[in-house]
Image 1 (tube, one colour):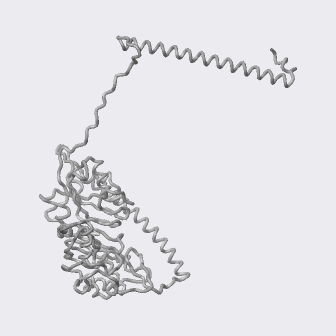
Image 2 (spheres, rainbow, N blue to C red; image 1 turned 60 degrees about the vertical axis):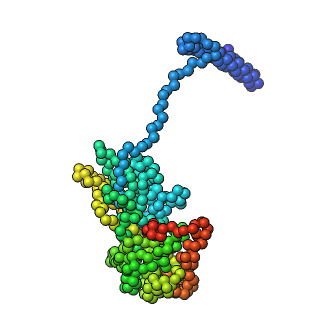
Image 3 (cartoon, one colour; image 1 turned 180 degrees about the horizontal axis):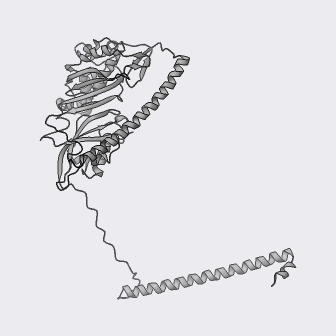
Length: 447
């Protein structure tokens, strides 16, 4: 039919023609689909019959062809064929970690040891944290950093191709944890019990909002810590340790200037061992002396357990500025990342580059923060600052704790005695005899 014929049709005739053509098209598509499906089924049956006769000579009914199974060897469990007992020295910035010690329960932040164990496992240097004879020198709390922390453990050893342990671990660990050396320790070495001396530094600025610390008074008070004393009034009591001996020997105690330009100082402290939170308690009292809130003699009063048998309640110094600066051992010679003269320069450079990047990032942030302080100071210069009429106590990290009035340490409420706390814990746990006090006291090193 020609196009001129449709030109003479009415609208209703055209619509009727279109509907008829649609019905014819649908009928044709249905027939084509049915034919295609029948052809596909026929082809599939032919293939099945062909495969059946080809792969099964017995021609048993209902038997299907099967592809040969691929043999997969089960994964071979990782095992250390040979190990060596080593001590490692490392540093870390603690402000992004939930403390040093590995925890079996989830923590708000990762722990330093958790990251170290992850690296050791990833490098196939240990099989499990529980089977590597692990020990640490001094436990540090959340936020506390370290420059000379030490651990000891058994790690994989290869005589054919020596393992560059520090470099291997540093390439896996985050940049704020750096291994700086290792050593083959003497027989019977234990990172905790073999440590002869621990060195702490607590950083602070001379000036703080609303005042200036008296460094001379703080130095005079710090000297009173020297020697062996009962430090039960300078620690947090942990009844689970059942400690009865709170005597500790302080070898060096003084205030030193770190940077005269910025008036950055540090409480520099060295001793054979420390109780839980001991360093932060000692710093807290020095801050009170430096603010002229307490007399210098407060240190001697708190060290006299006859005069002050129970610890008065006072705030700890902030954890953030505290550093476990070094741990000292006898008969230990630390080897830098490698003792191989051919690879030492490359590995040392990698260690420096990563550490420098970490420092540079923090230095830039410090400068940005200083710009913000300058901007805030301009507002103070323009409008003035409200003078607080109560008492403000410096607890470190530039943070002040305010109260309506200051209550002298010796007039404050006291905590329960060590004996009462220990006895209540023993009754609760059904313990007949206390744990060895010397071993427990050694276990509570650091903050």
